[in-house]
Length: 298
Image (tube, rainbow, N blue to C red):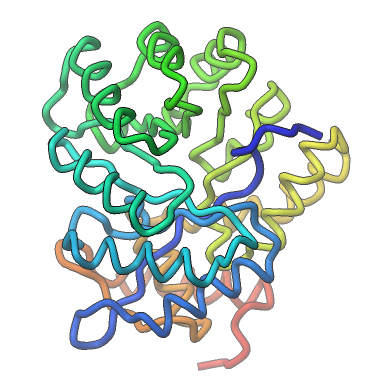
């Protein structure tokens, strides 16, 4: 089994809001405790699954602080601190470091479409804060792909310790795995590709599905990390329908709906995100019942 510090199962945590739209601190604490009980390696608050484009800096700091408090050293905390403004990302990263996050997840700058040189300067500035950086490559949401040559140059910085690969391109992922430094962690950013990436030598996942099934996703990753491929395949097959249906609308709309139906948070989003359509709600309710996660029949 791999011994990389950042390997394993990380939950890209949803951010619970109260009906008045504010941060629901009590619900956030409950969500974190449930993740710890589910056996995850770490928690990622205020990532894009946590609706970070719509949260305020003060809310981000408070949410990360709460997660660190509840984690209490039992699991790691990797704070989402990305922005398409380098200055803002540096500020967010400093705040995360101050409240005790152990690392940070930094999404590629969206919309700006910086050149490779711009990307390297962006991540270098954030790394200078002194908090270990996981690069987040998700071209489908940012409009830019971090190519392997650029990433490998970044990886020479001792504070840039890994990548969350959500390019959707398994060939690119395998190229990263083949060329990475020995201590550079490669985490999958797409639940449905976790097993494939780990078969190729990847180290784990930053998962959306683990918001609602932390133990099952943790079990999948643990089997894969140990090379127990038959067992990992069984868990992956069991979860395949969930991995698909949690993305029937833009993430995190479906997973937050599921969490609300399970009673762990209010069904409150920040615009421009909104609740799923009635059709999607029916699909998700059926999904929850099929997996034994929805106890009522309403």
